[in-house]
Length: 158
Image (cartoon, rainbow, N blue to C red):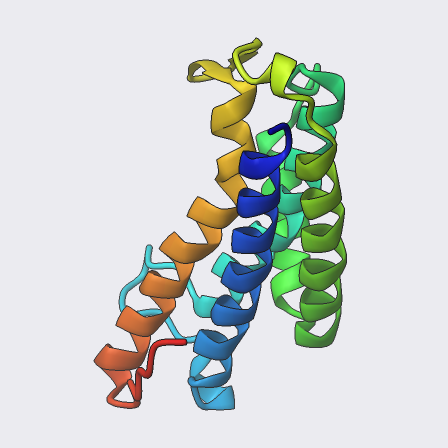
């Protein structure tokens, strides 16, 4: 039956978004922009990445090509700006996760094996469909690690 993988990955992305925000909410407000060391990333920076890239993933699934002229410095600046406004960050994460979920659900089974050239190598549409789920789960773990460093990890699955 068509759509089983799409529905699974879309729902998994929605759950991962909820879990990511739960991890962020587990940090005291004054620790959400805390860095363990000079080059470490803050929890807000990581959530900002997810918020932006979920929207980018939706575009990638629809266009089947990496954006020409992608500017990493511009992406970094957008991420920094978003991380400085937690309300906007949360709104964009929810909005772009919903957009990504819809884009994932719209991928026909026949497109799973289409290869898309990325700056680091080719990836299939099927792999890109899994990216929002994977990336948010990864960053949930990173934020929980920050919580363990500052002594406030109170993890309860689900």
